[in-house]
Image (cartoon, rainbow, N blue to C red; front, side, top):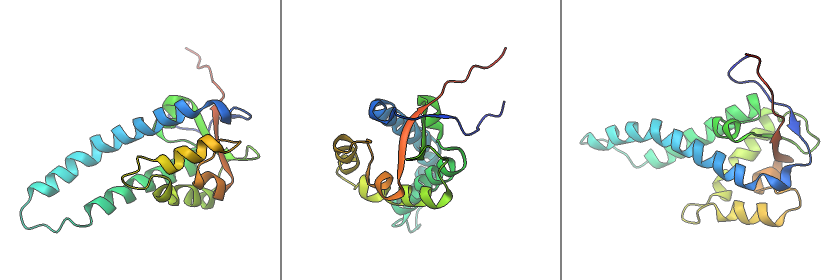
Length: 151
């Protein structure tokens, strides 16, 4: 069994994965900070460097990480750990185009200073628990079917 492969979605579970989605985001964020944090610390410690774009670069790296893993596998490392997967509203695997739409709008869903309240509010008020990126890309986050591994 490969470390990462696209899981089978459990359709109809999008209304009960909010806690898992938050947990997945926090796991991804911690992993990102563990990797990107030391790099940015090194850059800040070097005198004479122009660092105005570091925040933008960090955001771009995070968006590219989520874009690739969700398009290729339907889930990031955090989503895999929390047992959720992103699929289209009909349950099909999401394409790179849909992933680009979904993750490109992360900038609005998680407006700086608002602690992702835009995305959270939309998830709470939409029937299929979709944030703006999900609405535009026609995607949903559902539970991944559990797979049993043989020992």
